[in-house]
Image (cartoon, rainbow, N blue to C red):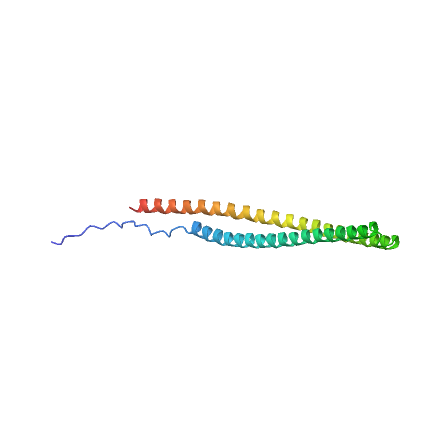
Length: 158
């Protein structure tokens, strides 16, 4: 007597699914973006610093020009009042003084232009800084979400 074995039922074993990598890819892309934003922020900071240094130099140049012009005029007036120079020399000195004042005014305009560029560089820097901070916050949120998903997957496998 032969014992017939019963047919076995095929056990339906699901194929192991590959873990979803979309969040990991998103984290990678965001990390690259964060690196680019940080680089842009650093470049903007450097440009702003250079602009401020130029602004300080222009401001000091103007101050020196004004001081030199005032000292020149003071000396010319003192010479005239002491009667060591003639009125013709005083007129020449006054014309020279006026040219010096115009030069100081041009330097003031150059300072104002540098100030406008410096303000623009400052706005660029703070815009880049805000973008980096926002990207950092987003990266932290995605990192936390990724960690939570891993913990949940580990718990479901147990």
